[in-house]
Image (cartoon, rainbow, N blue to C red):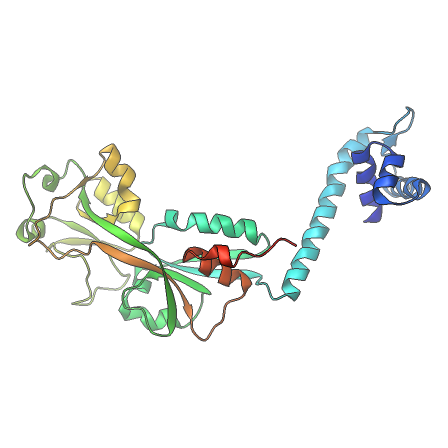
Length: 303
């Protein structure tokens, strides 16, 4: 490692004497270290025929490899130091199906910059993970942080709000509902196929949310529901953040629903949650604070 550092220092400083001053070492020690390195690799790294040493062809090829070795060693030592301080090796995030990822990516990008050695394992759960019927499953573990809608969360989870997700009821411009004049009542909505985000298992009576139509197609992925509505196959309610570009471009239109129409939910609260009996490590606490808008108070200081 020392030979690699000296080799790189000579290249960066432009001469053995300048590198010696930078490293606060004798020039003869640097010359000997580079000669030993050349002996070990079996080829000259510098052309010494001119006033200042210049990289040989082999030196040009081996310089980035030497730098890569030093970088890897530095990362190894940094990771070892962070582990000794209690920093997580990996952070598991459980995200409920239907959560718009574009709301989370800014925080995840900041996390990557602050904790470059911590791996993220992001698990997108079926939509059922966000409902009361599977609250027990949510509380059992499997993730350090859970990002999901607040509806019917169990008390075993501490939750912190991220945002209120506005929902809009939409259809493709070609859909018959989009071409109707005036507000749409419950009876009109019932007569047209609705695309519903649903659980993998069969829905239980009374647990449906946002369902008005007598005929429904049920999908377990938000992206699939979005695609089917875009194609004009049915209508449905989607997060406004997901469809704002479609609305602006005219690929989707908002449906004018009468106040006495179906009792639609106008927004859902997105939260980040974790188990009360499982304390978070430094990276988990930072991401929790960042997602809930308090990251500035817990950002680690540079050392």
